[in-house]
Length: 425
Image (cartoon, rainbow, N blue to C red; front, side, top):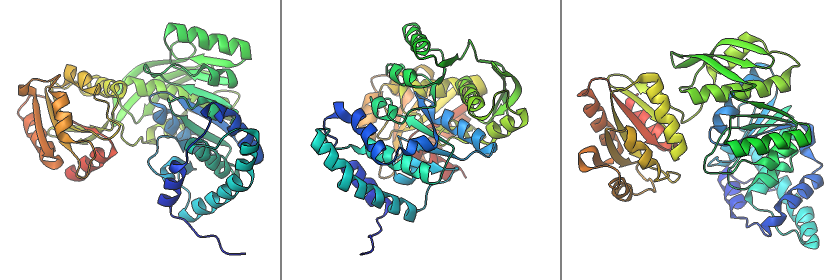
C-alpha cells in the first residue's frame, strides 16, 4: 500500500471550500445519511449549538467553564478563516499531521461510499459546510470529547446542523436573521436572550410541543448588580438553581454579562443536577478571552480595539465603551476588512466625534471606497483619510490627547486589532 501524501492545512482548506454543493434542498437529508455512514460520531458526545450575534463569546465562556470542571470539550467555529481555527479540542487546535490524516480518511469515505450512495439516491454532492461538520464530528468522536460546541452561522445552515441531534441550544440575538425555531424544536434544552415578541411566542410554542426546557434571560435567568471591574466587570448571576454572587467576567458591557448567564445555565444542565461551585464559575469566567472583543490597548489617551464589523456588533461595542469608560470625546480609527458592513457607518456617526479611515497593508477593502461611503454620514470636519494604519492610529491618539477624557477606538477585523497591539506594545 502506498503511503498517503500528507496535505498542508492550506491545501485541505482550499479543497474543502472548492467543493460545490448540489441540490441544497437535500442537504439536511444528505447530512443525516453522511453521519449514518460514518457510524454516527455525534452520538459519542453532547452537541451544543450556539446561534446569533455574540455566539463566539457564549462559546468561549461555556468552553472555559467546562474545561475548569475537567470536561473534555470541542469547539467548531463556522466563521474561522482557516482549518486550525475552525476546530479546537480542549482549547487547542489539532496538529497538522492529525488534520491531514483525518482529511484523508474523510476523503476516502466521500469518494468510496457517500458520493456513490448520494448519486444513486439523487441527493447531490456535499458542500463545504457539510464536509467541515463531518470533519469536526469525526475529530470530536476520535479524541474523544464529552461535549462539542457548534457555532451555527446565521445563513440558513440550520438544517444540516440539526442532523447532529443537539443536546442543547444557546440563542443570543440577531435582528437581521429569523430565529431558528427548527433548531429549538429539535433540542431538549434552550437558553435564550429575550427575543422579539412574535419570535418568543414561537419559541415557547416549540418548547411546549417538544417537551423541552426553555430558560429565558430576564425571566428564568437574571443579571443584577453589574459593576465595572479591572479588565471587565462583576455581576450577580441568577439561574433557577441559585444565585452566583459577584462573578468576575473578563469582558466589557452588559450584553457580555447576559451571554455569561446563558453559558452558565447551559453548563448547569451539562454538569450537575444542582448549582455549580461558585469558585469554579468565577475562575472560569475571570480567565476567558475572546479574540477581537472590546479590549484596552493603552492609556494616555485611553485606546481600545474591537473587531466589530456588523451594525449590531458595532452598536454593542459602542454601548460597552460608554457603559464602562464614559468618554466625553471619541475618535474611531477604522480599518475596514472584508466582513465590514457599510451600514455600521451610520451607527458610528451617532457616537463618533472623529472618524479616521485607514487600511491594513495588503488589506482588500479599499480605503478610498470606505472614505467615500463615510462621506454620506460624516461632514468634512469629522472625517479624515489616512491610508497608513500606524499614521492613522498616531493621528487619532494625538487628537484625543487634546480633548478632556478623549478616547480612541480602533475598529476593523482581527488584522486591525493585531496591528494596534503591535504598534502600541
